[in-house]
Length: 165
Image (tube, rainbow, N blue to C red; front, top):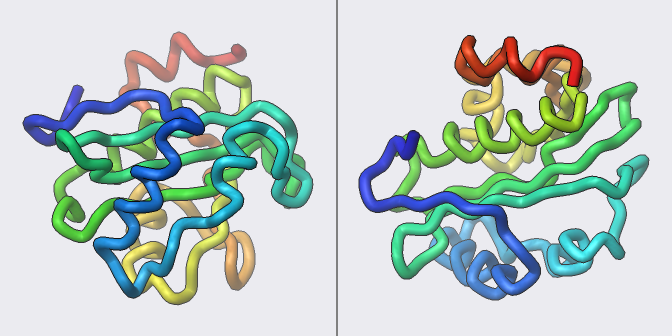
């Protein structure tokens, strides 16, 4: 299900944080990676109203991190989950990597029984809002978008297997 030849996806660990941070350096406008990322993945940094279960995935275009995503369960805005991080290196944008990372996180949320998912949209990223709304998110407030049911991002055959989990 890899949309880009030569790209591998896997769950990320704290050991990946240095390479994740290095990948962001390819986009000076994006700024540095969140210095709390290692603590977030270790479960010692908790965003507002976050619950403990969380996961991150990396897209690897050997030997580099082409992109990453992370999310956690939450009670923020009456949501079940929240997308915490999503980044794709500039040379890999518009290749399907971001969409595939989002689908992988959507599957994890569905497996957790988390269907209403929110994301804080970076106002400094002109492509963030169109990316998320293009994947079915709708306006929650000035800064946040929401999927009422994240399973809409999953292939129809998979959605049925994850209903009610």
